[in-house]
Each structure stands twice: as C-alpha cells, then as structure tokens.
Amino acid sequence: MRKLAVLLLFVAVSAGAQTVTLLHFSDYHSQAVPFYGERGPDQGGIARAIQYLRREKSRGALVFSGGDTINKGSPAWSDKYGCAEWPWLNGIVDAMAFGNHDADYGLETFEKCRASVRYPILSANTPGFARYVVLKAKGKKIGVFALAGSDFTRLVHVAGLTFGDPVAAAREVVRDLREKEHADAIVMIGHEQAEDDYALARAVPGINLIFGSHSHLERDLTQIPGTSTWFISPFQYLSFISRVEMTFNRNAISIRGGLVPVDSKMKADPAIAKKVGAMQRELEREQPDLFTPIAKLDAPLMTTDLANRTLEIMREVASANFAMSTVSSYRRPLPSGTITMELLRAAMPYDNEIVVCTMSGAEFKRLLEENQRRDGSDSELFIAGKAVIVDDRTYRVAATDYVANIAYRDFFKCDVEKTGKKVRDEFRKRL
Image (cartoon, rainbow, N blue to C red; front, side, top):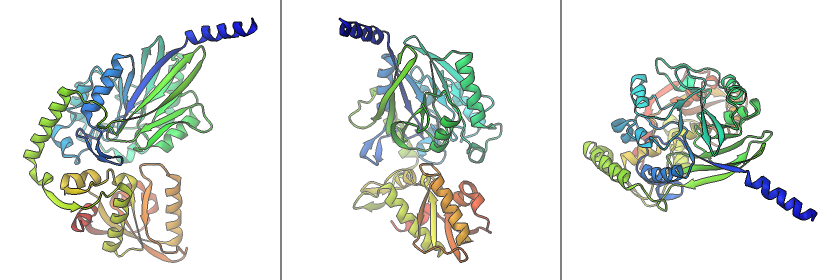
C-alpha cells in the first residue's frame, strides 16, 4: 500500500510538469547557401533552417538568434543583400541578440534593418536597445536578455553606439527579471566570448541557460562548473541549431538538449530555397570574378591545416621565428576540386596584413600565457614556429595586423613593422 502511495504521488507531480523547447542559432554571417564545412559537403543553408524552425515554432518552441547575421566584405552575399533575410524570420524568431557585425554597414542601415523585423533586438548594456523580453510558454515566464561582449569597444567602431559593462548590466537584468517580472527561468542568448559567458555565470547567479555565440564554438549542452547555469553553442553559419528542453516541475527546472545538424537530411522551405537560388545566380552574374576558378585542390584542406599552412607562409614572407593569427581568421575548410575566390574568401574572410614585431623571449612568453588564458575564445591564436624561447634573446614574430593592433595590442610594445603583404593574397599565390 505504501509503494502505491509513492507511485501515485510521483504521477501527480509529473502530471503538473511543463516542458518548454528553446531553439537558438548564431553567427549566421550571411551564409545563405549550403557549403562545404567541417563535417563535409552540403552543410547549412537558410532555407533548411527556416523550415525546421517554423515547424518547431508551430509546436510551441521559442526561437532565438544570437546575432552576427551579416558580415561586411565576405561573403559577397552580405555586401549585395545586406539584411535581406532578417524579415524572412518574422513570425519565427522571438528575439535576437545584437552582434558586433550587425551594424557593419553603419547605424543608419542597421536601423532600416531593425525596422524590417517584428522581433526585438536585445542588448542590455547598449543604449538604444531593449534590455530584455519576457516570453510566455506553457504557462511559464521565460526572461530573455543579451549582452554586448567586453570586446565590443574595440571591435565595433560605429558612430552612435556605446557599450557598458556587461556584468553590471547582467546583474541588473537578472534582478529585474526575478523580482519585478517574476520570471520562472532566465536565458542569455548572446553575444560575447565563451570565456566571458562562463565568467558571467559565476559572477551573476540566477541565469539558467546561456546560449553561446561570439566564439563560434561547437559545444554540446554542459553545465558550467561551479554554477547551476547550463551552456550550449551551435558553432556558426547555421551548421547547427541548439535545441534545449526546460522542464518545470514545481520549483525545480531540469534541462536537457543538444545540437541539431543543419544538412542535406533536413528538408528546405521550397519558397525560400527558390528565392535563395535566384539571388545567388544573380550575384554570380554580377560578380563573375569572384566565382571564376583560381586553383584546384586534390584533397580538402581542413580549417586547422589551412591555418598551419598559412602561418608557415607568413613566417617565410616576414623572415620570422614565429607567426600567429587568431582562430577567427580561418572560418571554413577548402573543399577538394575547383577553388574560386569566393570560396577562399569564405575560408579566410578578413583582409589582414602581415606585420612583424621584434620582441624579447620574456615578452613573447607573456603573450603565450595570455593565449592560454583565452583558450576556446574567438581571439585564441594559431601559432607556428619551433624555436626554444630564451628570455633575454629577441625574436621576430609575424602576426596579422588584427592581432598586433587589436586582439593582443597590449603585448605588441614594439614599433610594428608593416610588410605591405596581405595574408590571403600570399596564400593564394601558393595555391
């Protein structure tokens, strides 16, 4: 009889549980057309993602974008069509985080893009943006906010945009969501480095879930050590969609989920696929130089191999002991077969120059220590060179101008020597 009573109690509690599904993608960067990625050919594609997201939305899911939906300069799609896809997500996306690339074309253009959508664009520490939104699902109130990462001040140079302290903003938002809005759960949807996401969870208790974004990490659902906050990150370019289920059972929340691949197994929305195909053909007609063959590869060149080969070229060009470039400089592998300039730009999207700094071994070691601290960050470094580092010796260190002038500028205390040579151009010469 006692066992029966326990069973009946369990059934009664379970019957009152409610599960809310949350979906999130990030760092789309105008990659509308399926591409060759780390898992092989035919990955991503906005028509596939929209079909999946719309279906899940009709079943009650909440859908979020982590920002960085465009990318000035590469791909060519972004320069021609800008934010054309933003309104395609009306009625699907519930909120979007403001990313560091979303105002690449200036504040006036961004405001036109914002006016084209019905979903709010959030950034709790950026004046002019909503700090948060409260959404209702299955009778539960989900508080959702976003942050401009601590690096926005050096990455975003757009007149009219300023950025406050993200941790202080998050504390205020979490307090308001708990005490004023009485949210049942709190979710952060972007847009900062993963290391800052982890630090935020430790500094600001009360965040149930953080959707990773800015670091472009492929990371399955995991609990951040020392906290009750969960973290999941869907990589980039719509390679994956994060899917998380929050189950509310009285005062407890259980969280489970994983990454959903966006690939040829996922059906595409026919109307969007037709539109994307027509837009891509128009782009290729207008800019044929970008789609003309420039080389042929016998085998794919994966992202890490691409980085290593490029760094050796940088060392050669600069006659340097070491060469370094951020992980973010290499975004996609190159497939086997015909290579076009647009494929090369997709793999290496930034027009970085090779520069040289002569520094002591002790200075170089401090830079390497900083790189270890940034493990898993978008600004983590790929480094080439095998010399033994001695503190009182000097070394020629080749780097991209982004590394020397922005990402690690505090460690380049030399008169930076410009070579006048661009990283991507030097790699292309050797294809």
